Length: 227
Image (cartoon, rainbow, N blue to C red):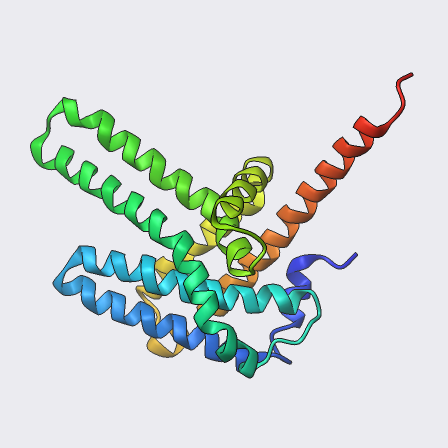
Protein backbone atom coordinates (compact mmCIF):
# COMPACT_ATOMS: atom_id res chain seq x y z
CA UNK A 1 0.00 0.00 0.00
CA UNK A 2 1.34 3.43 -0.88
CA UNK A 3 2.32 5.58 2.04
CA UNK A 4 0.15 8.71 2.33
CA UNK A 5 2.83 11.41 2.42
CA UNK A 6 4.86 10.23 -0.61
CA UNK A 7 1.55 9.82 -2.39
CA UNK A 8 0.69 13.40 -1.54
CA UNK A 9 4.01 14.66 -2.86
CA UNK A 10 3.38 12.91 -6.17
CA UNK A 11 0.12 14.84 -6.51
CA UNK A 12 1.76 18.28 -6.36
CA UNK A 13 3.13 18.75 -9.87
CA UNK A 14 0.21 17.43 -11.99
CA UNK A 15 -2.25 19.41 -9.84
CA UNK A 16 -0.13 22.51 -9.34
CA UNK A 17 -2.67 25.04 -10.74
CA UNK A 18 -5.51 24.14 -8.37
CA UNK A 19 -3.14 23.81 -5.40
CA UNK A 20 -1.62 27.20 -6.21
CA UNK A 21 -5.05 28.85 -6.41
CA UNK A 22 -6.24 27.35 -3.14
CA UNK A 23 -2.97 28.26 -1.46
CA UNK A 24 -3.15 31.84 -2.72
CA UNK A 25 -6.66 32.28 -1.31
CA UNK A 26 -5.52 31.11 2.11
CA UNK A 27 -2.39 33.27 1.98
CA UNK A 28 -4.40 36.36 0.98
CA UNK A 29 -6.77 35.85 3.92
CA UNK A 30 -3.77 35.34 6.20
CA UNK A 31 -2.33 38.65 5.02
CA UNK A 32 -5.59 40.44 5.80
CA UNK A 33 -5.63 38.88 9.26
CA UNK A 34 -2.11 40.08 9.96
CA UNK A 35 -2.96 43.62 8.85
CA UNK A 36 -6.07 43.60 11.05
CA UNK A 37 -4.07 42.29 14.01
CA UNK A 38 -1.80 45.34 13.90
CA UNK A 39 -4.74 47.63 14.64
CA UNK A 40 -6.93 45.29 16.72
CA UNK A 41 -5.21 42.09 17.90
CA UNK A 42 -8.42 40.17 18.58
CA UNK A 43 -9.71 41.04 15.09
CA UNK A 44 -6.76 39.20 13.59
CA UNK A 45 -7.59 36.12 15.63
CA UNK A 46 -11.22 36.30 14.52
CA UNK A 47 -10.23 36.52 10.85
CA UNK A 48 -7.90 33.56 11.21
CA UNK A 49 -10.61 31.46 12.82
CA UNK A 50 -13.52 32.53 10.63
CA UNK A 51 -11.84 33.12 7.26
CA UNK A 52 -8.35 31.62 7.03
CA UNK A 53 -9.15 28.21 8.51
CA UNK A 54 -12.38 27.66 6.52
CA UNK A 55 -10.46 28.52 3.33
CA UNK A 56 -7.74 26.12 4.41
CA UNK A 57 -10.48 23.55 4.90
CA UNK A 58 -11.50 23.99 1.26
CA UNK A 59 -7.88 23.45 0.18
CA UNK A 60 -7.71 20.47 2.50
CA UNK A 61 -10.73 18.93 0.80
CA UNK A 62 -8.92 19.33 -2.52
CA UNK A 63 -5.84 17.55 -1.16
CA UNK A 64 -7.96 14.79 0.37
CA UNK A 65 -9.63 14.09 -2.97
CA UNK A 66 -6.32 14.17 -4.83
CA UNK A 67 -4.85 11.61 -2.43
CA UNK A 68 -7.54 9.15 -3.48
CA UNK A 69 -6.47 9.56 -7.11
CA UNK A 70 -9.62 11.40 -8.18
CA UNK A 71 -9.66 14.60 -10.21
CA UNK A 72 -10.09 17.95 -8.47
CA UNK A 73 -9.46 20.83 -10.85
CA UNK A 74 -9.78 24.59 -10.61
CA UNK A 75 -13.39 24.43 -11.75
CA UNK A 76 -14.23 21.99 -8.97
CA UNK A 77 -12.49 24.17 -6.39
CA UNK A 78 -14.36 27.29 -7.49
CA UNK A 79 -17.69 25.48 -7.67
CA UNK A 80 -17.39 23.83 -4.25
CA UNK A 81 -15.69 26.74 -2.47
CA UNK A 82 -18.89 28.34 -1.05
CA UNK A 83 -20.20 25.07 0.41
CA UNK A 84 -16.77 24.01 1.67
CA UNK A 85 -16.25 27.41 3.29
CA UNK A 86 -19.68 27.30 4.95
CA UNK A 87 -19.17 23.80 6.34
CA UNK A 88 -15.68 24.70 7.52
CA UNK A 89 -17.06 27.78 9.24
CA UNK A 90 -19.47 25.64 11.26
CA UNK A 91 -16.52 23.79 12.77
CA UNK A 92 -14.15 26.75 13.10
CA UNK A 93 -16.65 29.17 14.68
CA UNK A 94 -17.00 27.32 18.01
CA UNK A 95 -13.24 26.71 18.14
CA UNK A 96 -12.65 30.43 17.61
CA UNK A 97 -15.18 31.32 20.30
CA UNK A 98 -13.55 28.97 22.80
CA UNK A 99 -10.09 30.33 21.93
CA UNK A 100 -11.21 33.95 22.39
CA UNK A 101 -12.86 33.18 25.73
CA UNK A 102 -9.76 31.31 26.84
CA UNK A 103 -7.53 34.20 25.81
CA UNK A 104 -9.78 36.64 27.68
CA UNK A 105 -9.53 34.52 30.82
CA UNK A 106 -5.75 34.32 30.56
CA UNK A 107 -5.48 38.07 29.95
CA UNK A 108 -7.69 38.84 32.96
CA UNK A 109 -5.52 36.62 35.15
CA UNK A 110 -2.29 38.23 33.89
CA UNK A 111 -3.58 41.76 34.42
CA UNK A 112 -5.12 41.20 37.84
CA UNK A 113 -2.63 38.69 39.16
CA UNK A 114 -5.45 37.18 41.19
CA UNK A 115 -5.08 33.52 42.09
CA UNK A 116 -8.87 33.19 41.86
CA UNK A 117 -8.68 33.70 38.10
CA UNK A 118 -5.97 31.09 37.57
CA UNK A 119 -8.38 28.11 37.39
CA UNK A 120 -10.52 29.83 34.75
CA UNK A 121 -7.42 30.72 32.73
CA UNK A 122 -6.15 27.14 32.94
CA UNK A 123 -9.56 25.73 32.04
CA UNK A 124 -9.83 28.07 29.06
CA UNK A 125 -6.42 26.99 27.78
CA UNK A 126 -7.27 23.30 28.18
CA UNK A 127 -10.59 23.69 26.37
CA UNK A 128 -8.93 25.65 23.56
CA UNK A 129 -6.24 23.03 23.00
CA UNK A 130 -8.81 20.23 23.20
CA UNK A 131 -11.08 21.91 20.65
CA UNK A 132 -8.16 22.46 18.29
CA UNK A 133 -6.99 18.87 18.75
CA UNK A 134 -10.36 17.31 17.93
CA UNK A 135 -10.96 19.92 15.23
CA UNK A 136 -7.95 18.60 13.29
CA UNK A 137 -10.16 15.65 12.36
CA UNK A 138 -13.61 17.24 12.61
CA UNK A 139 -12.86 20.06 10.14
CA UNK A 140 -11.89 17.99 7.08
CA UNK A 141 -14.52 15.38 7.92
CA UNK A 142 -17.30 17.98 7.96
CA UNK A 143 -15.99 19.93 4.95
CA UNK A 144 -16.03 16.71 2.96
CA UNK A 145 -19.76 16.43 3.65
CA UNK A 146 -19.55 13.14 5.52
CA UNK A 147 -22.04 13.93 8.26
CA UNK A 148 -23.81 16.42 10.47
CA UNK A 149 -22.08 18.93 12.70
CA UNK A 150 -22.47 16.76 15.79
CA UNK A 151 -21.45 13.63 13.91
CA UNK A 152 -18.28 15.36 12.72
CA UNK A 153 -17.26 16.21 16.27
CA UNK A 154 -18.03 12.68 17.42
CA UNK A 155 -15.88 11.21 14.66
CA UNK A 156 -13.18 13.77 15.38
CA UNK A 157 -13.14 12.82 19.06
CA UNK A 158 -13.02 9.10 18.28
CA UNK A 159 -10.24 9.33 15.69
CA UNK A 160 -8.14 11.94 17.49
CA UNK A 161 -8.12 10.18 20.85
CA UNK A 162 -7.04 6.88 19.28
CA UNK A 163 -4.45 8.27 16.86
CA UNK A 164 -2.54 11.01 18.69
CA UNK A 165 0.63 10.89 16.60
CA UNK A 166 -0.85 11.96 13.21
CA UNK A 167 -3.02 14.60 14.89
CA UNK A 168 -0.14 16.04 16.90
CA UNK A 169 2.04 15.99 13.78
CA UNK A 170 -0.58 18.09 12.00
CA UNK A 171 -0.71 20.56 14.88
CA UNK A 172 3.08 20.79 14.88
CA UNK A 173 3.11 21.42 11.13
CA UNK A 174 0.55 24.20 11.60
CA UNK A 175 2.59 25.86 14.34
CA UNK A 176 5.75 25.68 12.23
CA UNK A 177 3.87 27.16 9.27
CA UNK A 178 2.64 30.09 11.38
CA UNK A 179 6.16 30.74 12.68
CA UNK A 180 7.59 30.49 9.17
CA UNK A 181 4.97 32.86 7.76
CA UNK A 182 6.24 35.57 10.10
CA UNK A 183 9.67 35.53 8.45
CA UNK A 184 9.12 34.41 4.85
CA UNK A 185 8.68 36.63 1.84
CA UNK A 186 5.27 37.19 0.30
CA UNK A 187 6.07 34.81 -2.57
CA UNK A 188 6.87 31.96 -0.20
CA UNK A 189 3.84 32.65 2.00
CA UNK A 190 1.67 32.24 -1.10
CA UNK A 191 2.73 28.60 -1.48
CA UNK A 192 3.01 27.73 2.23
CA UNK A 193 -0.63 26.57 2.73
CA UNK A 194 -0.24 23.78 0.16
CA UNK A 195 2.35 21.70 2.08
CA UNK A 196 0.39 22.28 5.29
CA UNK A 197 -2.79 20.97 3.66
CA UNK A 198 -0.96 18.00 2.14
CA UNK A 199 0.56 17.02 5.50
CA UNK A 200 -2.85 17.47 7.13
CA UNK A 201 -4.62 15.35 4.52
CA UNK A 202 -1.97 12.63 4.74
CA UNK A 203 -2.12 12.54 8.54
CA UNK A 204 -5.91 12.45 8.44
CA UNK A 205 -5.85 9.55 6.00
CA UNK A 206 -3.46 7.63 8.24
CA UNK A 207 -5.51 8.26 11.36
CA UNK A 208 -8.79 7.42 9.65
CA UNK A 209 -7.45 4.16 8.22
CA UNK A 210 -6.17 3.10 11.62
CA UNK A 211 -9.53 3.88 13.23
CA UNK A 212 -11.35 1.85 10.58
CA UNK A 213 -9.02 -1.08 11.19
CA UNK A 214 -9.67 -0.78 14.92
CA UNK A 215 -13.44 -0.78 14.41
CA UNK A 216 -13.19 -3.73 12.02
CA UNK A 217 -11.11 -5.68 14.55
CA UNK A 218 -13.64 -4.99 17.30
CA UNK A 219 -16.51 -6.00 15.03
CA UNK A 220 -14.79 -9.26 14.11
CA UNK A 221 -14.15 -10.03 17.78
CA UNK A 222 -17.82 -9.47 18.63
CA UNK A 223 -18.91 -11.65 15.74
CA UNK A 224 -16.53 -14.48 16.56
CA UNK A 225 -18.17 -17.55 18.17
CA UNK A 226 -17.27 -18.18 21.82
CA UNK A 227 -14.64 -20.81 22.48
